[in-house]
Length: 213
Image (cartoon, rainbow, N blue to C red; front, side, top):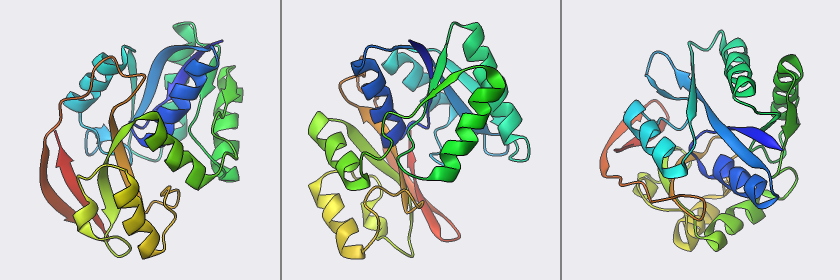
């Protein structure tokens, strides 16, 4: 089936895309929500230049969906309609086990006439992280809640060492509760690795963010 990937640039949506391709489905495009105020992707903070890098590295056109937050659902549905016009019959998501998120996405698909797919659903949070490492994906820790995790993790890759730090901190190592966010920069479905530079650390309330360019 031809599908659009709801893509955050992070580890979970990347492994979901990997699984969909592995099951024989054909990706048509990446649908990415954009924070109008910041001019970056929501939650994972990829800027426009970085998003162009993803488009080239994954070999898929990107549909950008700008939103100020209040119109998030309608902006996302418009993105799905654009994907459908490109030939998508379905939309895939990287959710693992949060029912409210899944219901929201199913409603967006119902409103736009697409079939929802959740290739990671109930696969287990820890199992998901271990699979990312096992398959060879390289995911940079882009932001974290510094009340829960040390800033020394920023700019590091998800590997056994960083997971150990997370376990010792007592958090969900998959970060499903917003403990941290990643940018995936290389792996089996990438045509070429993203050429990135790790920059300075910025702080916003309880969150610390490292510049990845």
